Length: 199
Image: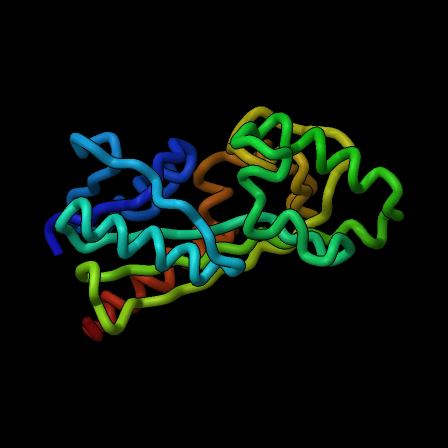
């Protein structure tokens, strides 16, 4: 595959994809490289289904093999919320507003109920009607903070504490984050699959 379309407008995700796929000999294209590209509506209730919606739509618009992920933060004590609604938890696509709502929501939770999981489901399709999409998943476990720490990353990173490093995800370098993160895990599975010569 000489050219791969990555179906996300999220610049933070684009940066991570570019870094993680730097060893893969393919040119990456993003939505801003297309004349007309609008994100499809994510109407499903699972990360898997939403990732597939984005992958098939991206392949149709770009005419290229397409990589898409759906990811988010899941808090077991909140019945998995914000989950698939992570990007619009506050009712809008506003990272700061989403974090403020989460801080307010967990305020009453005791420390032992503040476990959180970053989840990423990554899908690769060769074309829009690919009957055998490749699916990979990563899960990153951490603890929610009561206030933001760090200025790196994006989304909920400033609230996601990584116990083994005693830092928030927003305090990690991009290299450190990619070694541990949910998206990094899923992308390494993808690369290992290709290196095995399976497809």
